[in-house]
Amino acid sequence: VARAAGPPVFGGLEDQPAQALSVAMGMDPELANLTADEIRRLLHGQSVAPRRDSETSSTSCGTRARLGWVPLMGSEVVLDDEGSAFVLVFPCEESLGGTVDTDAMIQEPMEAAERIFCRRRNAASLDTLKKGFDLLASGPVRSGVYQSVVRAAVVQILVATGMKLDTFPSVDGDESFLRLSLDAEGDVIRRLAQHFRYRVPVKLSVYKDMPAEGADFEGGRPMEDHGKPLLAHVEYDEQLREHLQPFRHIDVVRLVHMCLDEWLDLNEMRKQNVLSAFFPAMHYEQMRQIHSEWGDWKHAWKLPSHDHEDQVKDYLGENSTFFFRWFAFYVRALVPVAVIGGICALRRGGAFHFP
Image (cartoon, rainbow, N blue to C red; front, side):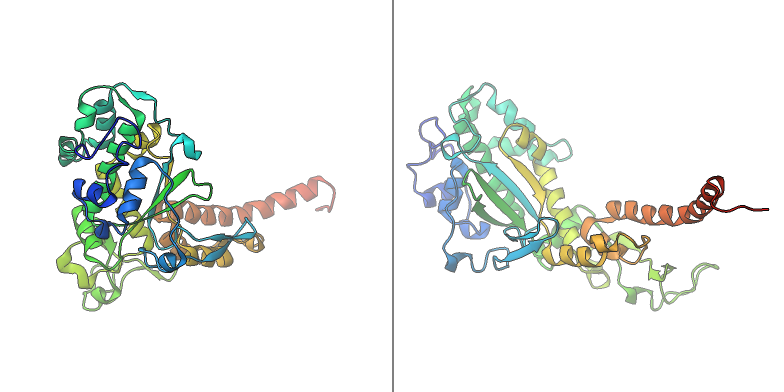
């Protein structure tokens, strides 16, 4: 990027061919699932041109763009994050309606970049600033140059992790959305799971030959809670792969976020206006099923139960599900108290009299 950069403006790389830019970054556009022109425009803070229908019929994230009805909104929307796990939103320059002032001066660009790329938990992240940041080492630079250099490093890190990348513009053209995805059955997610020592549940078949132990464990099957098996969770190990449950969508989201957090400070990127926002992507089918069977207003009259906890857990994760599990227990525990309180209130109000 430093070799290809021109004048210190946001479009400082605009005279370089897109293919040459990707080569200068040490990237393979095909690996990133981005065209070279999309890489160039993303680095410039320009709006990414929408692809033609023939190009968007099947995205790099493996799904076809389509409309979907979203509860509470009462209308159909384009499912533009479908098939992805995480979304990064980059603002465009002010001339395109974005929020990036390309002429603003960054007084300490290297220090600002360090706050994004140097992660205390990852010693290897310190090497990120050793290549491609020459333009920032000489002192104050314009925001356009800073944004280009930082975005180039971000895309390079994402490509190196093996994630699939896909980009598209916002409706207003003032932001660019970068979708990140992983194949739930691919080698990359297994490598990340082992690297982060990610815990996954074992399969039911693991318990088949397991002997009984004590009075609580009968052997041959896992312990149960409300008729649901309680599976043991172990750190992912490639040698145990055939004995472990497949990765869920929530697992893919977590591993992508863990990978991002290991190399980038997303909150700092948003603070510096490198990012407008970041969020996990929705899984449309799961969302619709949970809404129709559990979250719809038509179920408000029912006492909360534990029937849909597995669905909620697979979509929102264990931490959020624990709240709903506690909520169901708490509301049911209040029923006897509510009945007694109602009787007492009616008696005090004279509705009926006990001799």
